[in-house]
Length: 262
Image 1 (cartoon, rainbow, N blue to C red):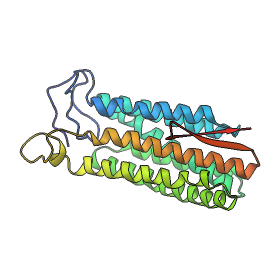
Image 2: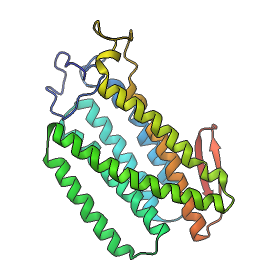
Image 3: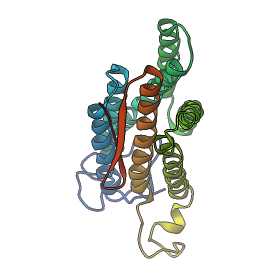
Image 4: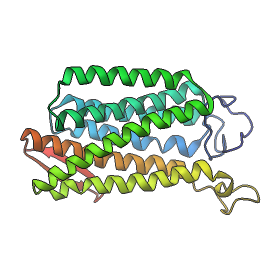
């Protein structure tokens, strides 16, 4: 955990977590400079997902916009390290993963959409209230358990979609699953290292084995955002397959998947 540098514009840290980046190192107006600006990756890629939506299904546009909101909240959180701004980051993360679960479940299973939407909305609101109502380590653990639990559900549903895409001879789209998982695993490794081994990698003090801070949490933002795009495009492709929508997928700059109907 990073030590608090001389007080910056936003004053004392009130968030339940303070990341490894040293606070107010580059400017007195941004607490965590690299962690803040790396959040722009989520804003850009979230808007890309919202705008490329080839399905005509508004839930995908809402999913993309929710990712954009996560990016904005993340920027505000890392810039201020205030608890109120932390909620603008974490609560939209819960909402976005809930939207992804709704899309995947209603695409793959023949269920009552209105009833499932109501139940999922109630659950998401309940978890959001609990997350916002606690502070400190309890809040941190509660949020991580809630978000990661829903992420596992979404990951399983993406895997089911991958299998159906492979069965339809669309392996180029199905390959997005493992591309997304690889990005997430790399991102998670960086997140865990930054969170648990900060003393040894912060580039400060005698215990650090590195001469400078590699800003691993900032790289988590970038890699997690890219992995999320892979999985969202996978869900779009699977939705098109199920609904009989003709589509094509290509890569922009060899990295970013782009899907469109024709």
